Each structure stands twice: as C-alpha cells, then as structure tokens.
Length: 192
Image (cartoon, rainbow, N blue to C red; front, side, top):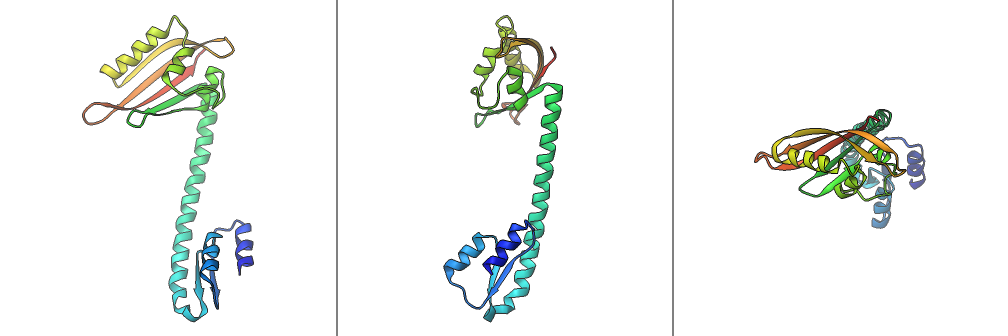
C-alpha cells in the first residue's frame, strides 16, 4: 500500500490515490496522507468510496489546473527575463505601504552586480548615478511624487567596473483613491 503510493508518486503522475485497507493506525493514516495519498478508506466503510473518489478526482483536476497555470507563469517569467536581458531593461518596484522593494536581475546587471551582492534601496541606486546627474534624478523622482504619475529622464550611471552607462529611466507612481502614492514601478534601459 505505501509502496504503491511511493511508486505512483515517483512516476510524478498527477492521479488520485486512495488507500483502501482493512485496518490502519492513526499514525499510519497521517503518514500516508503526508506522503501524498488523497484519502484512505477502511474496508468496513466502503460506502465512502464513491464520494472519496469524486473528491479526489476534483482535487486533482484543480491541482492539475493550478500546476499548469504555475508552469505557464514560470515560462512567461523566463521569457520576460530573457527579453529584459536582451533589451538591457532593468526594472524595480516598491510597495510604499509595506516598504518592500524589488529589483530585476537585469537592473543588478546594469549596475555591474548579481542579485544579492548589494542592498536594494534608493540610496544604493543613487550611489551609482553619475555625480553630475544625481540632482537631476532626485528632482525627477520628487516631481513624480508631487505632481505626476509618470516621469522620465536620461542620465548616466557609473557601474561597478567604472564604466559609464547612459540610462533612459521611467518612473510610474500608482496612487490610491485619495491620490496618495502607494506603489512605484520603474524601468531603466541601458541606451549606451
């Protein structure tokens, strides 16, 4: 019984598995469910079998749809990452309510780094902006927050290796019903 479950799961088949057994301890039942069985039925309660089968089939159907959806998302994300890399477009987003900030791998690459090598923050980013362009970038950001929902600027950055890169930056500020900024999304394209 547990060997059959292991065999089915090792084949990576997304099919329902219901264990029918004469006796089962509570510990064995829990372990069977942890190992991937969808349900178990004692032989003296076989009247539960049709309902358990329908539930297991519906669950696997939903699980298969979810897995297909996740696989599509992963494939689309991989394609978007490759497109960003080829076009030299780095992106970032910031949730102003939670303070969560994310940078794309390509934004790290434009700065000359890999993910995890530097802290993700506006202050970190501004350290890479060419000294002659820092005030322009800060003013553009401030203008975006105070009066606009979308701003853009051309500026230079000095990458980790010392090379100068020309950047076309765009900032989109999303606002709530009260017109307060709640989220920022930005794009930096290396147009060197």
